[in-house]
Length: 279
Ligand SMILES: Cc1cc2nc3c(=O)[nH]c(=O)nc-3n(C[C@H](O)[C@H](O)[C@H](O)COP(=O)(O)OP(=O)(O)OC[C@H]3O[C@@H](n4cnc5c(N)ncnc54)[C@H](O)[C@@H]3O)c2cc1C
Image (cartoon, rainbow, N blue to C red; front, top):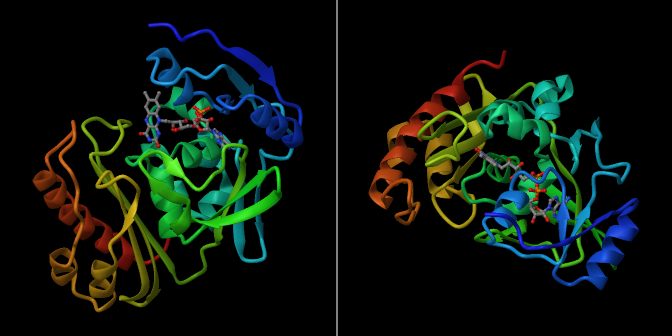
């Protein structure tokens, strides 16, 4: 299938993109196009205009400052995957990157696009939730910051308003005692996950505290498994698996029963990663 006809405009500034979103109510922002163009081609979406944000400067940087890592919306997956700054200060993101699609997709897809699209089986939204990170957005009333836990609101639904542009994501940088874990099960490497888990914790030897487990592929949004987090901080992996209170639905990939079982398998793998010494 081919997309329905649409107009195309390349925005040169955030102000221009926001103004165009105001003038064309059903317009869509175009970042890497790796999700948007597929939905257009399948006619799941028929916007009258695409507003290309790739020419807006200031959205493509990565920085480590004031104990936080900030990644601009237009940073491409491949840039994050190869970034020394991310490998050192954002090891959870570094671990997740190779699981996102295939090299061709990672060459064009952006971190901002992935967070804004909010696919429930995507890796990065779960990482941002596990990191207790935040999203920066700019709209007609200026800049605002939205915590990850408030950002993902439903199936492909976020706290972004219709005229908002996501400009960056931000989260605490890893410290010496930070431990991270990441695992997912997919039919083939690079496919969206059937179930996945992004995790981080603070470690004192083998003892863990501040455990954060964000599952994906088990609901409309990534979800924290709070009871399992508490059990894992108590050092009991079996109790953590038993405490998993996820409520997945059957989907095209697997039944809810299979997903619940797989979530337990992933939790055991990730618990092992969390207790390993940091390289
Ligand atoms: C075959 C295939 C396999 C894939 N596998 C995976 C996978 O395993 N894991 C995974 O996470 N992803 C996967 N993807 C999706 C990929 O990661 C996309 O790059 C990502 O989801 C969207 O990023 P994008 O820059 O391409 O956004 P686009 O496709 O350009 O945009 C996606 C949506 O986000 C909006 N948007 C984009 N940027 C902004 C912004 N800055 N502010 C506000 N709204 C914005 C757009 O308007 C649009 O609605 C796959 C894609 C394909 C085609």
